[in-house]
Image (cartoon, rainbow, N blue to C red; front, side):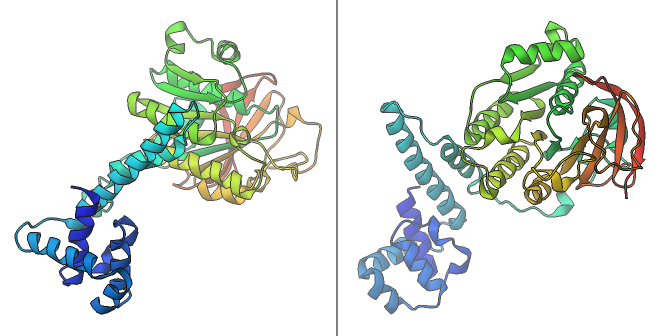
Length: 386
């Protein structure tokens, strides 16, 4: 149905009090019917509306509703939303086509948003919880033994399903190495993963995997990588499309700072965290995002507040891990007696876990660290942190 026709019918049903105008989003209506419904919601009568928009739109709306009222029972609100979404998508695609014809890049993020809105339109976003299986997995197994042994809850382990996992640490302490290790373990278990590296070329990525995991050609075929310089919106669009085509086990992004389109500030960093969390939710695939620390960190045990704009990270992250390699930094500042320094070892600190703790609370996993490029594949123990 045309957007104009649906708007006329819904407005007429509201005028005749067959529909409650309060349940209609005025922005979903074709002008001037957005004004009609908005005025009805605020308690204006028909006379006031006619004075504002004219007699003809009101008469047209009532006549259109007369045709369907009591004759064609339907969910006219849903029909209107579908028509509005199609019209919005059509305008977006036309603008994109014009830009492409002129050799310019369209707004890929706007295209993705329109497609998602079109896909959701007309369907209810609500469900009664009796229809939800309580045994549905909240955690996704990583196949990396230290994670699967200590992360998760009493019934399942790994990283949060469809959630954002943030790994923070200063440079040179093993963020990328840990991500490579996680991916290596997943592909060795037969899973597919996606790596967005904004720092390394594909050749460097391959060398990194060979160094740390010794992957075979077949195992490397399950790693889908992109080395292109992409904006945040392009990452969201392209990875969303990839996730629809491939059964991805998780998505790795190295690293957050390089996704910034402008100068680093609270708004731009918030957009990165929010978009990555949205990517995980919309695709149903966990996203592991690497992040640098802020300038307040000067050594010692890193904590959540050391992440850049940590409040935003804590709000968006389902799981936040901090890496502590005391052998990699010349500093005693902030040492914690609960995390003893052992030669050739580092810590993966669980700073936040939204869906519970397998070990009963916050803590750190001690793992072998060779000081160069590789984390060990066995846990050396769990150290509780209150």
